Amino acid sequence: MGSNRSMSSISREDVAHLARLARLAVTDEELDRFAGQLDQVLSAVARVGEAAVADVPPMSHAVPLTNVTRPDEVTPCLSRDAVLAGAPAAEDGRFRVPRILGEEE
Amino acid sequence: MRSRAMSDVQLTTKDVAELSRLLTAGDVSAVDVTRAHLDRIAAEDGGLGSYLHVDPDAALASAAAVDQARSAGAELGPLAGVPVALKDLVVTEGVPTTSGSKILEGWRPPYSATIASRLADAGTVLLGKTNMDEFAMGSSTENSAYQVTRNPWDPSRIPGGSSGGSSAAVAGHLAPWAIGTDTGGSIRQPAAVTGLVGHKPTYGAVSRYGLIAFSSSLDQAGPMARTVLDAALMHEVIAGYDPRDSTSIDAPVAPLAAVARTGAEGDLRGVKVGVVRELGGEGHTDGYEPGVLARTREAIERLAALGADVVEVSCPSFDLALPAYYLIAPSEASSNLARYEGMRFGLRVGDDGSHDLDEVMALTREQGFGPEVKRRIILGTYALSSGYYEAYYGQAQKVRTLITRDFTAAFDGVDVLVSPTTPSVAFPLGARVDDPLAMYAADLCTLPASLAGLPAISVPSGLSDGLPVGLQIMAPALADDRCYRVAAALEAVQDAARGHRLLDELPSAAGVRA
Figure 1 (spheres, chains in turn green, cyan):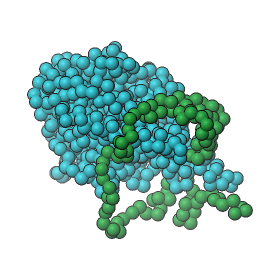
Figure 2 (figure 1 turned 45 degrees about the horizontal axis):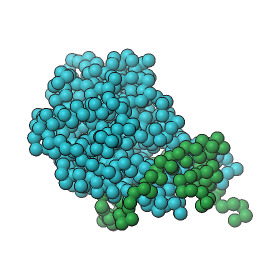
Figure 3 (figure 1 turned 90 degrees about the vertical axis):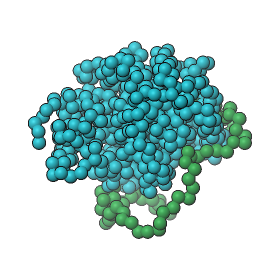
Figure 4 (figure 1 turned 180 degrees about the horizontal axis):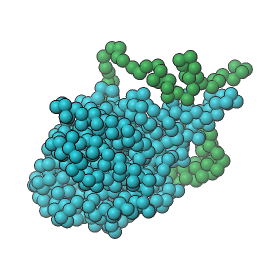
């Protein structure tokens, strides 16, 4: 991503790069549209930078719970068939997925 | 079983408290009540578009089971036989669940959300699943991948969002009540613009197990109903500790229906109400419609007349709630929505032998997600990427702390905070669909309580140009009862003043067919 641009600016190339990272095969038309819209949104949200928060701790969650545990006991779970019934493709009791490694790998 | 003592129209106009009384007394059967709603759905929903999925046979079968149990003398809960609608992100075993997205079209989940199970255990009858903005991203329900939903008050306008199918169904009398979910306002804003009561519970009060995730640190399910009492009745059913949700709070649920009933007596002496200056107060009225501000002022005057001690409070960080939210929510969404990769459930595109795994994932997500979902995934990916994380996501998390501190300081001096629920009445369909920032502005008043995880209710405060306006009442964490108390008092005094309920002014349902 270009580091020479101002913080709150997002280019068509940036959007293409981000879409690749997020596994979205966006079209050229979408790239044009999203770049303009996201640039507008980013300018608006960049206002968080105005807050004086040097000594303020970040808040990730409203409920201050940590390390929630449960007894390590075997409990019933969904059956294999029930889970595979929702799969786009299944074979031999497993999820069937496309080729993962290239032929030369 | 008795003959049908009441017409379908009469049964669909009853609120839940009344239906419960009639069902328990044996004056009507669950089948009658269910059929009345199914008939109305069949007649009206072609125009309204509130439901994505209705299974009349299944609904009538569960209603018949309730009637059978009741006539066999079984001890049934007070809500047994009352129909309910669920927003389509509530996972329901064997019942299509799409979250408004094409990527989940045709998926029938192998399990049920905790709240769906609790409603079923209470004997309620599932009418169907309601339309919504895709993955709950939106304020108008126009981001649904399936259909437009119209506002029963004016079919040319939005029903709010993202729980717009639920709001339209309940306001249009196609369900007596419904489940909504609220991440940044998605229960409260649609309730406000359709004249309903909608409550976002304290974060962690209602289980998120089986709710399709958007932004996990913000998502909460809650009731959408025609009265404060009905909302409280639903809240009592769905709330409570659930070991399947690690953020579930292990605390008892207050007797909210009792609080709503007492609240309706209208005595607010000793209650301190803070009016948030930054949400429509002096110097902060940009973007607020005059009619909304006028109804808000009148509602606050009524609270004062009921004995509440009203003061203005300042929460300066609320000005940054919108930018903080639109960094945090998309960031969490970009992570949550990574699960839609076309391998384990839902849509898969391009698996024809010519594409490898990565390409199939990218093609699936490209075809399965709509534009707003893609925009938010891209924005979230950006805000979380190395080099930008601190400036955007990190900074937004610190602003979240500031907002929470503003609430804490305010609640040192007052019991509840009030504001308009949303800055405008329902806007026309299409008006903001190509302008994300204008759409996001609908959440201006609801975002602070979301970010702080606090309970907040929207209750009708009247009409502006014939369209409903809502008052938001916010309370400290786990003090949801205060929202119900004040809302019930306001509702009762307004109903008494006008001599009928606000929803009685709903234009003829025939308009919905337009």
